[in-house]
Length: 216
Length: 220
Image (cartoon, rainbow over all chains, first blue to last red):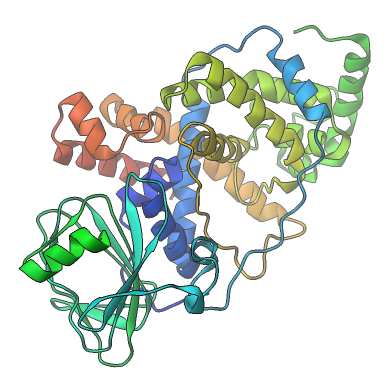
């Protein structure tokens, strides 16, 4: 599926995903973006090829005596892996996200966090967290800074952040020195998948209290 | 590793059928190195290890598998140990990875990855599962799925690029090469590498960027 994507994954995240070192929540955003973006899909192939080249040129650690025989024994107890059915989706959520939500948009259990904004935690390993955010068309996202890295992927509608517009498939990566107040574009309610590895810092009291209660 | 008489026989059979089994390897053989009578493993190839995977896939060739094992298992074990596994877990996981090579051989597509890259992704996924106890979200498939018969020219081009890439990686300035290796082998984010090496994060990032530029340049 090809969208009009103008904001792509930065090299560092791409490389870490190819290397397998990203926290699960970030990997989920990367996999979901790549499902929508043919350009980054092609870049992933390159970054994985670097991994192959590193494996080819890297050090070696000798295996124990009889390791090959042990492996042959392992093989003899196994059948060929079945070829998996093609995983695609025609919904709002690409397949990797559907796997985590347990379905498409209709399966999300939203919680209101004020101002018409809703969110739903997407369970992943603890090193980082992922959530879906629903911002009504034309509404502001709560003003916030970040303690760590935040990745935002648009799944429906669009939002404006300073002079930039982020639509379906676009990805924005924010770091600690960035404070921003994204506003949902007027055309449609905006739904984003967001991963962070540090808590957000809201600049006003009410969201700060809500943050504690709602784990955002 | 001892090779029994029956294995020797199957090696002979394998060598004789390599050309027929893998059109790819035949096609890219240089004229002075015809497929017959030459052990595929002993010579440099533009498509390293593709013939061995084909032999495992088409006739469960144990000798071809042993050659793959001998080359890749120690590299996979090193990768797993650098990713934080102790020797026992790395040994066990390496055997799992190599067994997966056998059970997934029919899914290997030489137009999409070199054998080293394919094995790297298997080892990576296994390491996320066994060492980090996490799931790995994978992108969805392209709607038309993998080609039933990979295009020979695509496969040839991809395999040649992979060889060039490995060459370019080994020719990187030491400081850059070490960082690329750390980024892939070592389970560290770029900031963690910065903390560990005492280098500023900006230096790490710019070295890795320079390295990537060079690698991309090598791919033309």
